[in-house]
Structure formats: C-alpha cells, structure tokens
Amino acid sequence: MGGRLALDAGVLLAAVILPAALAFALMSLRRWLFVRGGGAVECSLRVIPADGVPGPWRLGIGRYKGDVLHWHRVFGFRRRPRQVIHRRGLVVSNRRRPEGEEAEGLLPEAGVIEVRDGALTVELAMSAAALTGFLAWLEAAPPGFPVDLHPSD
Image (cartoon, rainbow, N blue to C red; front, side):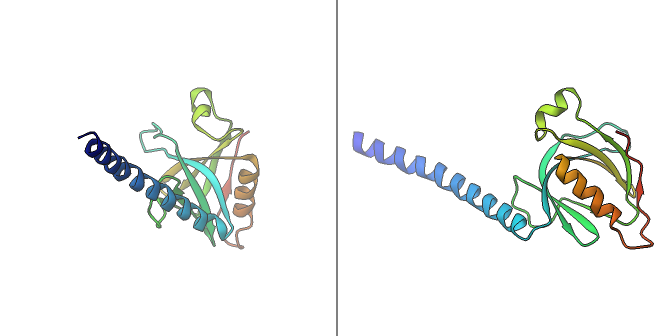
C-alpha cells in the first residue's frame, strides 16, 4: 500500500513539474531567439487609454525591425508582438523617472518615456542605455519622416 502511494505521488509530482519545466524552457528559448539577432532591449510597457488612467506595467522585450519597434511580453509564448510602435509620426511627449511604488515593479535605474503613435499612447520604461538607443533610433529616421521629440526631463 505504501509503495503504491509513493508511486502515485511520484507520478503526480512528475505530471506537475514536467509541464512547468517545459513551459520555462520554451519561454527561455523564445527569449533567446528574440535577443540573438540583435536590436533587442528589455523594456516595460504600459498603455495609457483615452481616460488617462494607465494600465499595469508589463515586462517585455522591444525589438527594432526597420521603422517599427515590436514589443513582446517576456512571459508568454506568442511569436507575434503584443504592441507595434511605428517610427513614422511618433510623438515623444514626456520623459521622467519612475515615481513612488511604480519604481518597485520596473528595472533598476529605469527611465520612463511617453510616446504617441496615432491613437495609441504608451509609456516605455528602460535602462538609460536602452533609452539613448531608442532616441537615437527615432532621430535616425529617414528624411521626411515626421518624428516629434518633446521630452521634458
């Protein structure tokens, strides 16, 4: 009886641990595939809806692909980006340091930048080096690209 109970407990434990380990391995592989090609930075994102009440911060990876920034959640399985930010017509409206409790959920020493892409308004939180790279990507737009930089810091 005791041996059968131990075997059942072992099978149950394996049924829980193996899928969790497989999910972790798949997320790690997905992250590695995003980062290995270059042009990727860790950044958090939150959407600012029309009512002005920001949503929660989501940890992710921003990946530059030509004139767009694809943003993918870190903890997920989708290959398609959750958000696509177009360089053409992008407006940078604010740059600031995280405030109060908001800093606890972000990467250390992160800076926050608010951008508008048409009707979409988001805040991106990233390291100083990643933020410098983001601004350089914006400023390197081809001639005729309407990019509006109005950061206040």
